Image (cartoon, rainbow, N blue to C red):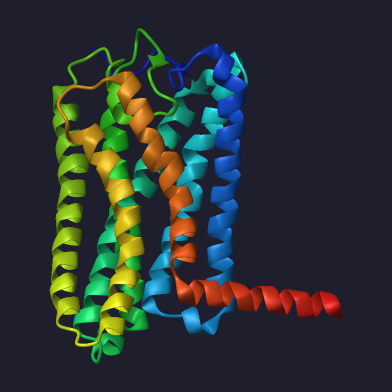
Amino acid sequence: MSNVSLVTTFILTGLPHAPALDTPLFAIFLLIYVLTVLGNLLILLVIRLDSRLHTPMYYFLTNLSFIDMWFSTVTVPKMLMTLASPGGRAISFHSCMAQLYCFHFLGSTECFLYTVMSYDRYLAITYPLRYASMMSGRTCALLATSTWLSGSLHSAVQTILTFRLPFCGPNQIQHYFCDAPPILKLACADTSANERVIFVNIGVVASGCFLLIVLSYVSIVCSVLRIRTSEGRHRAFQTCASHCIVVLCFFGPGLFIYLRPGSRDAVDGAVAVFYTVLTPLLNPVVYTLRNKEVKRALLKLRIISVLIQGK
């Protein structure tokens, strides 16, 4: 059979819901999307303008905010189109391919970045005196670049293997965006090899990153418990707590979807909302409301704005 696809357009079924909920869901997801973009842009602006935040931790946070802003943009606008009108459900073959690539590129880069961020916190708390030399600007740039390159390679493999299959029959994707598992169900060929690649390329890699993050935080907890002052222990735990919250919200749903046997379309769509819609919003919320340094920088930015307006 030829590997040339006969399908030129896919139809996204969207989130399973009653038609009467189209408008309320549209309003909710639009609000979340606007808050996500503005919140992450605010973090980028604050870190850029405040020299006290030019540290490795906030350098990686800048990368995370940039990723989350675009990660949400890859999926949410199309979801809003499917809720706005039936015609918005259509997506061309090449647009679907681009969405799949961008989704896995940004998602896997974020996965690797969380691992790097946990390593950064491990060094900062375990080796405070040597931290500055161990996490130099050059080291941070190399680590960040490696996460982007790894994410790009990871996504390229996934996209090429998915869209080299023939699609000659049904074209309805049981999801609100183009993801590999629901697309494979439409292929006119054996997809067992692709399913194994998904398990290894996505599930095992994500599980490996999550395991490294857990090991980093176990080491951090052991180091924190050796801190003599209660204030020092509290500050160290507070620094890592925000990272742990976002990590759990990102990895939990992803591992549930890609590692469990079988696939249930309705369940997968609902669970995917957590890491495609809610997690990008959590980043600015958690890192601003739970972080004193960022709140001080926001206050400083507000004061400067007031002074400028006063003049």
